[in-house]
Image (cartoon, rainbow, N blue to C red; front, side):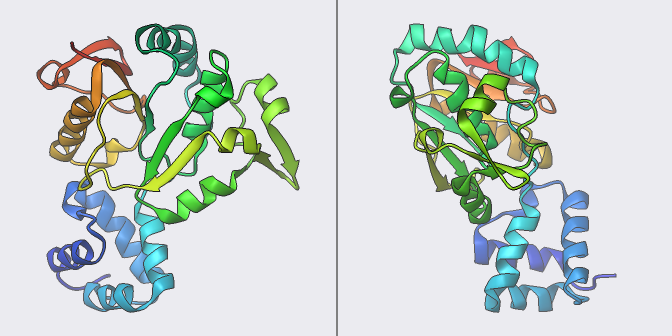
Length: 260
């Protein structure tokens, strides 16, 4: 049983990382942190907070553990089919070939690399550029390496598997020509400034871990970041209840268009 003042621990974490644990569902997040503290053979929040300040390895483990990094290529293939057949052609028709695209909370890179491949059916690779961001520098490093398990790439279309992946032991490495189309950066959805004039924002299966207030704030910021007519693509575990008030038009369960 982990002892101590969790509220004070949240303040210490925010001072150290600018991650606001109050924006995450408390019971779920607290359970995760408690198990991590116990794994490191500690029994209170105060000692663990001191350890995070002093021990780089402990700090990196903490960041990697509390950020949720469950990802795979072409997750929910039916939604990617809709993207391929409807929304990509529409975006190119509306905004031209030099689209501004953001993969937010991109985890280990599966999603932005899926986007590059999806767009490559419609545009030459040299016309495709994806901005990909995540809070966790460890997963960004993994994304830049681009090595994935067979399970992670199971839903990738067969022609792309043959063309863009090579076996490395029991894993698969994505090709440099796909990697070159993605620029990775650290970004905190809850506190950092959002760029504007995006044609497409993709953020899937991440905000379910946030409180309703934090979730709504992020969806509103996405709306402010999109061009009129731009598209937000969210995950199958999410929905935007007040999309009209935020300035969206619902095109499908997982695709929202910014009103003009």
